[in-house]
Image (cartoon, rainbow, N blue to C red):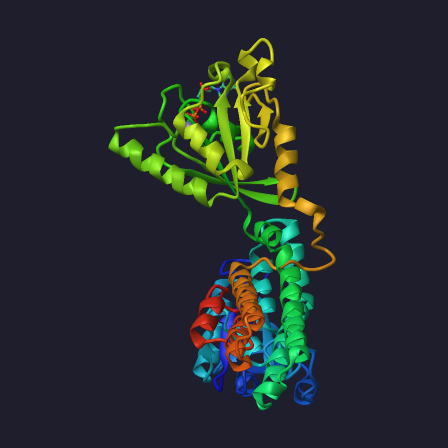
Length: 459
Ligand code: GDP
Ligand code: ZN
């Protein structure tokens, strides 16, 4: 972290201005060489959070007229001296200015390196750093709102509270370990189990909304399934309001999966149109069908289309039965093409009561509003509000919390089974490791690089 880094903070292209970021110990010295301020006295006064107009030079050659903002460490984004150079928005001026900084001893920043420095200097934790990436890449207002809340630090403090709980458990165990065996009485056992239970409950509380959080962040993975020709591609097209998948009358046309994103309310749906699921000997079709099964197992929601005119008889294919049996709770059945029926007699269908089924017609646009309502109610089960308590949404963080809860459960079982305290502490310690991964209290360099490389350059 001794070197000074430079990077373009704005997207590479043409615009009104570009912003170049410079951070590190040498930043001021580099600018003293390259920058000729209009108000020399103001520049030399070394004040922070100030704006300076002037010309940027590479040696004797003027590169551009610039505005430089100065934010001195430690009260800056990275915690170091940070300068943001606003130049004219062409790629040539920006590139030349960066090259001039490099010549004066700066190094080109890696993706996310400014943010990584902010993390390493304690300006933000990993929950906040990952929220920052999410804020930049969010595609719905809701996911942006959630990211902004997480950035604010409230989620971090809830996690830190649990971490503190776990640290307290460890010191309690340390304190009792020195006692002779017979002095660890029932009271101590009770106290320890209560402490662990409390930490576990607080973790579960944070975990509670994470499924919704993940869907807000990543979108709802929605797979459209059904026998060939039932109307899957037509449904996808109708949802997209455009022709994207190939719609034909020949069964088995959609051999490759088609992925699209649509927004329902403020929820992003990641839609996959699968190959029609049926028994097949065609090797190409079989690959598609196998992929379709895989997609079904991974999906958050399955839209299973049944053909109204064909199922009047109440016969389901084996494939349809399998989906309804294995994935009943995440399947929404759309009984499509009801426009072909004169009466709605299938309403009292053979479908079991647990299965949610809608009378549907892609052609006559029947059932779309009900479908959207059902999807939204599944995402926001229990009306979790994202605006009061920021939900956990990042899969890495969710997994670490799950592991933490699991370790606390193991510790609790050990206490109940009268296992010696120093052995209990093994599970508590692994719970501590897991929770520390979330905020980054304890992380490997590799994980950090992995996280920050997902940022863009200049961030
Ligand atoms: P897929 O093989 O499941 O993707 O089915 P397609 O979307 O390619 O549709 C097969 C045929 O059914 C096409 O001719 C569609 O126009 C027709 N179709 C789709 N939805 C409806 C509907 O609600 N009513 C009627 N009558 N025909 C439909
Ligand atoms: Zn299709």
